[in-house]
Image (tube, rainbow, N blue to C red; front, side):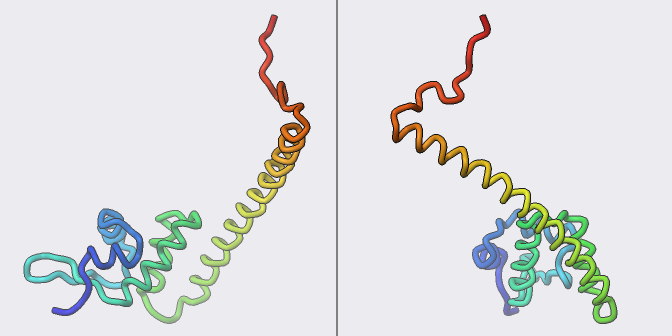
Length: 135
């Protein structure tokens, strides 16, 4: 039986063996994972490609429930592309919102770094935002 072992897929995807088993339990694969006569999982190259997408979606914050829904839509075949697109658009909107929030935070942090750099350079950093003891 040709195919890839769970270790090879873990190495190729950067996912742990436990994560691969979790993805399988959660129904995130597009087809049942084949097994050898001895019960070892056997993956196909297409599984690695699919897992790469799943991993990116998870890394970008997609909840398992939404990923499970997306996988079910893909698994069911043609005819539901508008539903897939709607799901991906909503996730894209949420990711963009998080990026916008992070950019606001980054701007505030950068301004604070600039202030501290100036104080360190001028030797006036002592006491900058130092806590005071009530009394």
